[in-house]
Image 1 (tube, helix red, strand yellow):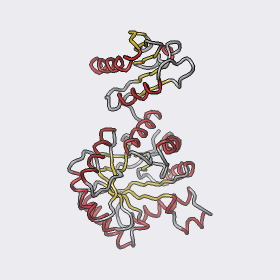
Image 2 (cartoon, rainbow, N blue to C red):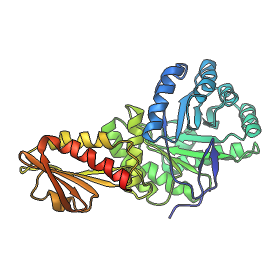
Image 3 (cartoon, one colour):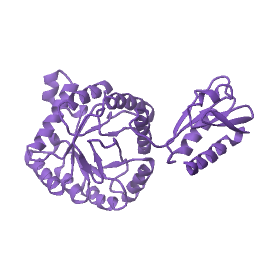
Image 4 (cartoon, rainbow, N blue to C red):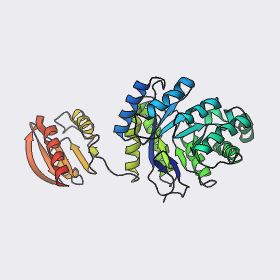
Length: 352
């Protein structure tokens, strides 16, 4: 059961309320390099990204947003650190949302200047707080960096903006400590109805970051907490989208797209199953079908294990099987399994 939060429109994507959890990522190109940034955003769009964020460290980057926005198809968020003028410039150049930490924006007067422009343009503000920037007084109060301190810091920043007369807000409260992050979201979800942007910050490489994010996001989202997510990985941002989609599908919070299941291999495996499974996973990316595809390594247990899949292939010695909903429909040479699966997927699209 999703926690009830207020609806916030970010461009043409609305989060909160009963809206689906939106998937975000952030570019790692230089924002000033419009061509490279647009190219990366197009790849993210194709992978399923619904909201994208770019850093805005200077005026040139802020001006680039206007040219970037004209060439993309998803809402554009400006990431601001320290300089309130960049927040204003980003909004003036078409940012659909800005991400700031009101505590480091400079002063109440500077924050009011940012809020004034956001209010005039009805642009949401994401209030971002993370464990690496927790204030010293809160560290002293709680005896270190804690979930309780993160929540108090975030709500303090929210109140600063509310005191400026603005409530078009999204809250982001992140830590690289997975269990601390989970606890912080549990605490804050009972104290506010603003939508929450959820993620494990500085999660690490594609390998370790995926594990941390799957555990952290899984624990948070399974409790009905969270309205938009980012899987933060040190790598190609497209990997963040693939991982986020898989996390949401696994939790039953998103549907659509081909789910690939494959066996872990054993001594009975007589084909290069690892390579085949990876080829299948790449092949089905972007196919608009809500089905399960099984890739199995032997004809002994494969048909039975693939019974719950819509389509399956099982490798054998010299030949393989193609299976539809538990029934063997054809035998093909081993080296034609991938093409046989491709053929079945094409016909599935036509039939359904």
